[in-house]
Every structure is written in C-alpha cells, then in structure tokens.
Figure 1: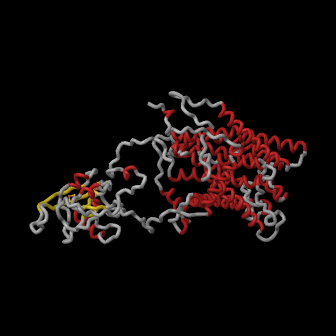
Figure 2: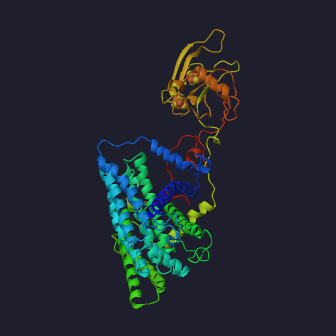
Figure 3: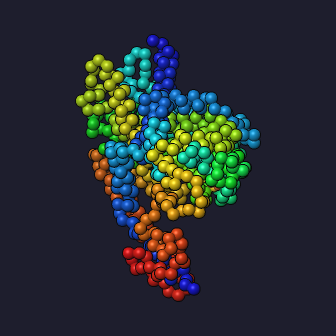
Length: 388
Length: 224
Ligand code: SF4
Ligand code: SF4
C-alpha cells in the first residue's frame, strides 16, 4: 500500500480514536468522581449515561457562540485552536503499538523514525501554553489574564524537571526516539523496563506532566474560587470544548509517554513479547499498551479527587526547590553510572536514596523555618501559651 | 476588659512539627488514594433519584397553601385579615363581603382571596395567625405554572388544593373542631409536630417560659 494512504489511515485512526476516547474519558471521569464522592454521576442519557458524551457534544455545537465585544478577535479565536492543535500534533510521534510488527494498512505511529521524538513532543506541547496565554490575554478580562499568567509561570517551571527527568531515560537507552526506547525495553524483557532504574525520574515526570497539562492538583490557572474560570472565563460553546479537548489530549499524551518511557510500552512478559508470533499478536500488543495507559489515566483521575489544589507558592517551591534539584541529581547519577560502567540497577537504589535525602532536607528546612519564625505578639499582659 | 489573648475561650494552636514521612509527601498521598479507592469499591450512594423517588417530607413541611372547608363544605375563612396582616411578604389580598344570610355563624366571608404563590416565602405566619384554622400550608412543593398569573392562587384554587390534600396522611387538618366558632377558643388545638425540632440541650427548651431566651449568665467554660 502506498505510504501516503497508510499515513492517512493512521492519522484518521489515531485522531478519531483520541477524540472519541476523550469524550468517553470525560464520562468516565465524571462517573469515577461520582463514585469517589458517593454520588451517581450522569445517568439520564441512555443506560448508565453512556450517551452523555453525545449529548454534551451536541450541546457544545448548538450553544450560542458568544464573542464578547471588547476582545481581540483574532487571538481570541486562535487560542483554542492552538491549544488543541499542538496537543494533537504531539501525538504524531507517540507510538501506540508495536511499530515494527504493524499490519500493512496501519503504522501505530503517525510520523515514524523521528530521531528527536522526545524533544519534538516537549517542544510542541510547551507551545500549548500559548493557547492558554493568548486566550487569557485576548479575553480582555482580569481574571482570565491572571489565570494565563499563572499558567505560563507554572508551565515554564515544570518544563525543566519534565525534560530533565526524561533525559536520564534517554541517556540510558542511548536514543531520543520513542520507537527505539519502546523496542529496547521490549527486547530486554521485564527487567529492562526503565521504571527499575529510574523510579525517581518517573515520579518527577508524572508530577510535572500533571502540572504541564493543568490537571488537579496543579490546575491553578483555572481555579474557580479565585479566578472565576481562569483563562477560559470568556469562552463558551465549541471554543471552550476545544480547550477542554486540548487538556484531555494532553493527559492522554502524558500517559502514553509515561508508559512508553518507563513501563515497557506494549511489552508484557509471556503475553506480548517481541517473539510472540501468534495470529493477532499486534492487536494484543496494542491492547496491552492501551491497558497500561488506561491505568495511568485512572491514577491521574484518582489523584484529582485525593489531593487538594496547591497554593501558588507551594507549587513554585515544589518545582524549584524539590523537583529540579532532584532531577539534576538523578541525571548526574545516570551520567556517572554510564561513564564508569557500573551496573545500571544501582540507579534504582540511588533514586531511593535521593528520595530519602530530599525528605530529610525537607524536615530540616521546616524545622529551621519554625525556629526562626517570629513569635505571636502578646497584646495586654502575659497570656498562657500552651507549651508544646 | 480582657485582652483577646487572655480570653480562655481562645485556644492557641501551634503548627505541628513535620515528620520525615510527611516531608516526602508520598505516604500521605498513598493514604489519600486508599481512602478515595475505598469509596469506589464500597460504593454507597446517598442520592435520591428525584422524579422517580419522592422525598419523605417531615410533617411540618411548609408548601403550597390551602383554604380549608368546614363540615358543610363552605370556606372556613371569616375574612378577618389577620393572615394578610401577619404576612411578611405581603402576598395575601382579601376582599371581604357580608356573609350570606344563611351563614348565621359569621359576619363576613372572603368575596375574593388571592395569594401570590410566587411572592410567598413559605414562612407559615398566615397559618399561625388564622384564628379559625382556615389557611394551612400543605406538603406540595413541586409548584409550577406557565405564567405569573397562573400562580396567583384565588379562592377556588386554594379550595381545590384542600379537596386534593385533605385525605393525604401528610396533610392532616390541623384542628379537630372542624367547625366555625368563637375565634378565641383555643382550648384544644392539637400539635402535630413542633415547627422546629428541639434538641434536649437547647437553651430555649430548658427555659422557664419556653420560647423565651434570657441573656446568658452562666460561666463561659467550654462544656465537658
Ligand atoms: S407563608 Fe408567609 S409569606 Fe406565605 S402567605 Fe403565609 S405569611 Fe405570607
Ligand atoms: S386569618 Fe384565617 S380567617 Fe382570617 S382572613 Fe386569613 S384565612 Fe381568613
């Protein structure tokens, strides 16, 4: 089959699947959050509410499309499209199956053989923040502008640990190409999964990815209590839906990356290995990677309803005082291991050690802060402060 | 005057010291995730599926009004205007007229009685004020109408509400006299339920004359 047809089929399948999945992920998220809060969730449209995404889509399409009079129209209309476009574009280099065992009509990656895969993803997804910034700026609304300011500060800060956490993996595997990283782990078997050598990097990656995609507990740019709706206060109907789709696509991409970089992509011992050659093996492998991605997404949703939103200074502290030094130390450890030819499984132990070190430093810092805090001012007379 | 810092009611709390595991965040997050998961695996929704499942209203629920009838099927109201006077929302309009000659037990009756259900705040003051228990609030809560005028309830509509609800166990006629009489005869008014549930620890329940709360004079110690 000519390559262009295969590419078109792959694009159609990938984009169609991503957008439908997003619709149903939203339903799943609403259901899950309802279960976590002992509610029932959407249950009116169809059995168990399974037609809710259709109803939502219809509503988004048919709703009045308000463009406030004082906005900068070009940027206002451009922002949501940038948001969705960049996140979808990042998906182009994400392999969603065993690339070298694909059937003839499909390819499991839209743009194969991109040697700078990881760099491409980070470059493109960090452009998504332009959607947020332009949207907030063009809205001509203080709250939107504040929301987009927060978003830009947050995304720029978390970009650093995100990139550095992945550098370790890239160094260990000797490539930035996602297909090769996936293949190397599959060939090496279960113990070649990068999570064994880079657990700390996964933690940093996962946290920063949450922050990058503006998910709770890092969704300060759209925090309702302080900013009305944040950067999308003025957006309604389909334009709002585009922002929403962009955010969810970002979550999907981040989950795929997490699985491909750290959890062996489509590899599962005994069931989906490079040697497994039974009929439909490629389908099983696709299902394996989808299942892993699904688990990560559910974890993200559970975290959403578990951890309350950070304060903005806490958010910045976490990035600059914890994640960035940790990811730097982790990267140096990887370099040392590679340079001196040590066994790479020492890295797992080093990760755990670094983690504990961070904990000890955190306690010490807090103690020092409490010690140097000014005491409460006594007003009239001595008041009995209960001794601790 | 006591300084705010010397007030024994003010409890001073110091920020607890952070331990090692707290500083690493992870155990707390895992603990939280476990709690979240427990709600999914042990799923016990408390939601009432409203249109299919009607709420169980307490007996003293205050919904749409009705005008009661006496044993002869006549409207009980004697157009004394007490409810209209008591109404804080000013939503009752009554036009009194001389009672027909074959109604010897009263002087007046309402020629028109209009209650604006949209303006009403459902406080129940009208029911409290009425000397002959003619106006009562029922349990009907799902009141809808297609226009404002449809929700201006006149005498006929209010009487119809009575006909619809009089046999409903949730809306007992709150008087046993069932007849008109001297308006001040309150010797035997049954209480169906107190308007507000009173807990035993409530100061107003312990007061010598119930309902009157004296200024508090006891010590300000926290109850044990
Ligand atoms: S319930 Fe209150 S507001 Fe409504 S008519 Fe009676 S007195 Fe007026
Ligand atoms: S208080 Fe009772 S009797 Fe008097 S006008 Fe109102 S409903 Fe009629």
